[in-house]
Length: 184
Image (spheres, one colour):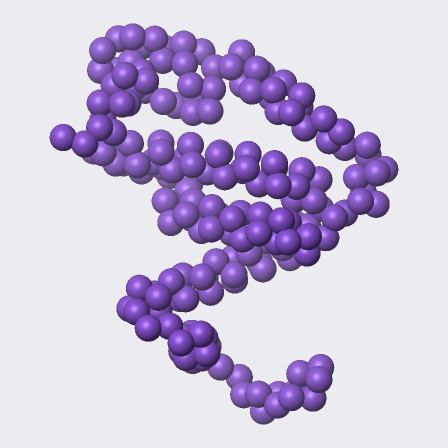
């Protein structure tokens, strides 16, 4: 048995026992509810590992708008990976789709913590650096820079010009991408 800071004794649990305890405590009734508890615990572990590596100030610097930008970036990666799969191409080498889903889930929970005002604000660092007084201006500048770096190239399907600053590896024009995504 182990005692926590309040002197309450508890036994060490396996991940499976912890999952069962959460399901029982929350009175989860469905199979998918039980599965989502398992997935959520995996996300919490990944979140904690990244907190140990990076801390909170990178999120504090940009707040909820930064979370929106990060989720948009992940959604773009997700789209790219899924479209490659639909075309029968191999996936992305360095980021499996499941990692992207975990990141989106964690960014969503971080956004909730920011919205509830429980995320550390990191003001002491931000005040010293004078960071992010006008996030919109910074973001617009970054998007314009990305557009300048993105080179037009022909669509591999129809030959039309492809320019996607959020996905410089995109091989299809917007119309061919639409056709690939459109249900039959």
